[in-house]
Length: 232
Image (cartoon, rainbow, N blue to C red; front, top):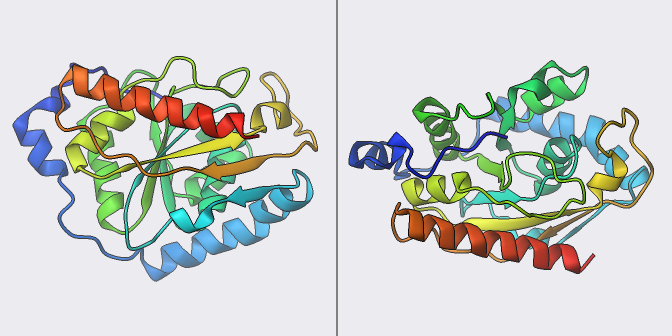
């Protein structure tokens, strides 16, 4: 997933006010029905049966408390699995290439993903995320912007922290455990290995959009995700 640079024009005062989350509604009935159908029919059975999946601390997701979900990324399976396990409509800033993959493209689109080209996240993309938050959706970002061969976070980027600074919403670290083994790079068929989702404790947004504050929040998110991964 592409991430904006820390000196992005999104740091202007005008952009800050335009992205502020001042009112939250519930996702539309059609969105909730569509999400449940995709989750319950296409994803959840595979997660439970093929991957012996489980979700740890699901109570930390609350529809009444919007957050920005920030996670590691080890596999193309991550967007649909994470979306299904959060059990609430969620939008991803996801690589445009995912939308061209058979079946998976349809799934991530139905799950509300926002396509971005690598290196081209801009005001329009961030505004789309802000709009989804106002509609009552969750928004999830992969902190490295691309897949990690071992599933861990090595080179976190500031995109999630920047969006948190603009919206002043907390960041919720989530670890996707084992997806890099379930569908490694270069593999076209998933393997029946355990995949778990561990939901951490929310972290506050950066106090400002300065590079220092963004770096500190990003490092805290990365450390929290890796600590969750260490729990297995």
